[in-house]
Length: 368
Image 1 (tube, rainbow, N blue to C red):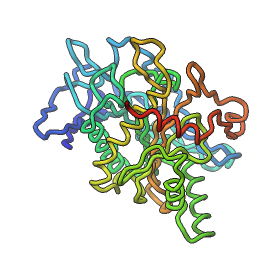
Image 2 (spheres, rainbow, N blue to C red):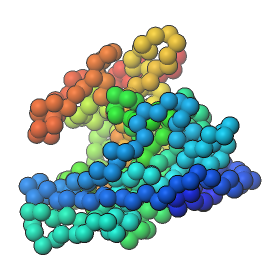
Image 3 (cartoon, rainbow, N blue to C red):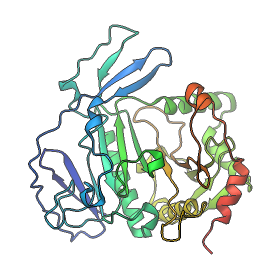
């Protein structure tokens, strides 16, 4: 992996990731951009003890532009985009409309003296990861070498963002599909560097610590051992990774992908684990796309999904295990799983597909 660092016209950082060290990345961003000020703040919910990010400036972000005006495509034929180069393999840059930003403290004053109204600047960082230059592609269309390059970019950004003093946890994820809420169709993901540990991670830490206290063993190691011994929920197995539908899946089709060796985060994976990951992950994504028929013969199968890396926070969380969670809100052709009263109101999920049936259908979605 070869990395080239540069800056955009408004001072934001951009990184090109290439497979070959001979790639020349010296194109200058010629757009007349003014620096964008972030008004991000985080507020503590006193009832749940959870941080909520308020980023009202994001109302101005780009929303469903025509394909010819996509800001994530390369800059070509006189049209300047967020990526100055005329072509690229993988590129990462600071989001112009971030939920969290390192300069938030310059615009937001902290209030820590009122336990009912605790407010702090949303110091952190949000980055965009462009997986490919082709606007009409998706991650599942990549070959293994390009998928590995994305993994290398995720790993590099995890290492660099974790080193920032204000950052507590790094979260790499992809939203795909308008049904998920995606506003840019270009194949891309995001990275959030949080100034706090999100509540779900805190709950996982608490459960893992309680399990260690009661059994003397690690929760995630025991979980993976049990799932590998449960063939009805297994989807894929490699020498270094295992994919399965969880016993208590929340989503209609949900798969968790674990390295067989417990590690804290992406930076701790070894070369054998990194080498095997692209093939298994691409296989999973393509199985998701084969779950439901395309709406017409001309359109490709594109199942909407969220793909999310769960990593241990920078400090603590030693009982956690790196894993990827992949799930779709589509429960049947033309039907979506909406988070209505019990899910949105109480976080009490009701799943529409038996997890064992979901795993069976994913196994059957293998290429012919």
